[in-house]
Amino acid sequence: MLKKSFIFFFAVFLLQLMNSCLFRCPDPGTFENIYYGVTITAFNTAGFYPVEVVDSVYKNAFGLTVSVNFETKQIAATKPRLIPEFKSAYAFSCEEDTYLYPDPIKNLEIYAINPDHSEKINATSWFSIYGYNSDLLGLEEFMKIRELWHDGFQIELSDYQSVPSDVVFEAEVQLESGTTFTNQTTLIHFKNPVK
Image 1: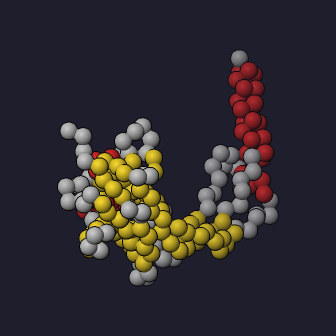
Image 2: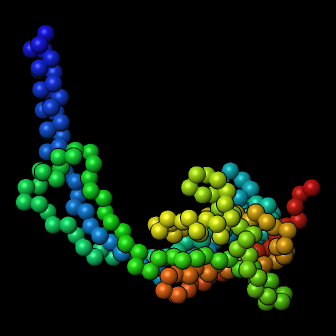
């Protein structure tokens, strides 16, 4: 019985050793994400899946996707070790890449532009976003707790009482350095809600 137990544990150890020697982790690197623009897309959220707004949409089924465009540049690479097998000793856990944000996102604001008056209204408080715990937060509140890596936002129109029937939405992203990027949707025509 003792011999069988020893053989079993030796076989498990041997499998672990073979696995750690055969499984090669890629060399981790350090990267910088450099922001250069913003994209805004209007969505109809009425169905099972959001679809891009083509003509008109109900106010209570409207959302925006705001994506901050960035370029990733590798700024450092980890030197391979003298004996590459030692870095694989963790078997299933490899060192991860590191991402730096030299000029991170400071704020995101949404504006509503009425095409009849060219009046620009801050509409940030009209929108909500699902937080990290799946709770619905105001966009302003979410920006205070946002992680640095979070640079894409799917926001929903939650306060639609003040929204005009025809409107253009503008997203303005502000970076820590003071640089701002803006982009606008096409003209959105809101249908009257079904009663």
